[in-house]
Image: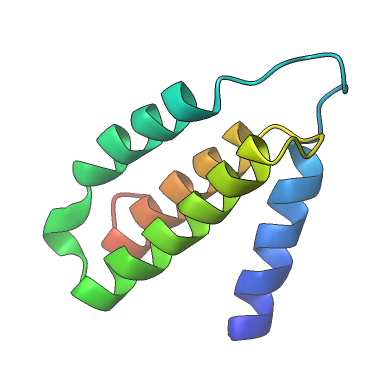
Length: 89
């Protein structure tokens, strides 16, 4: 199960690759992700919330480090995974 999650995250990272000339709004994107994520907390355990926050923060850190990818693909995938886990999909 953990391998599937890691593979899905890697696929999301690769899917979110953007051209090097595009500058991302890392802070604004992360704030939007956290705001959307907070609406899904009701059906999640504390450890699940912490796991999603860590993954989202990893994408933010990569964005801030100047890595050439768009973190929005990662954040969208995490939100989708949260919906699935909570039974919204």
